[in-house]
Length: 171
Image (cartoon, rainbow, N blue to C red; front, side, top):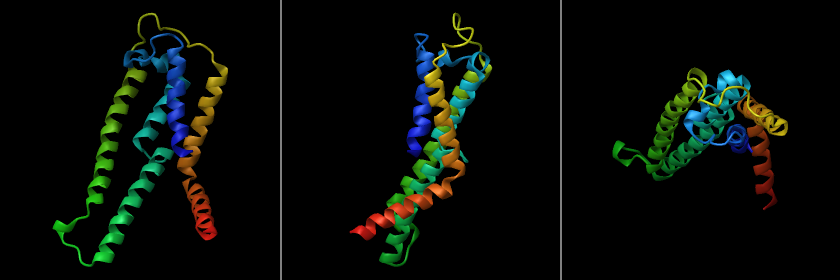
């Protein structure tokens, strides 16, 4: 659910752009903030969540994956005894790669944000986008869940832990 909300939101914004035909290019995002400030802001929030920037839900999902990786490595170290630098568990590299990937994606998404907020719209793409009221409502729902699952992550994690414990106890 956490991953679905911001990914779906970004695709919904792009679907409104695509309703103008040819909205699948980076240039079609140019000047989006001038044409539709709300859509530009939501798209930027969705992209930052995709990159894993706190306090958005994408950060929580990436943090939980990295914490799981670290936990696996630490359990392996405690089971197998002492640790030397040459014995670093391979999953530490996976965690490092996730952090590096997030840093690279922030750079890419900031570039897209620059186009949306500071470039001029393509010729023939001035003015507001088609209405699409139901799609815009879905974008608002995705935005609210992206923000809620990021800020209220503690409640979500507690709920998931309770569900997992209930499942384990049932076995």
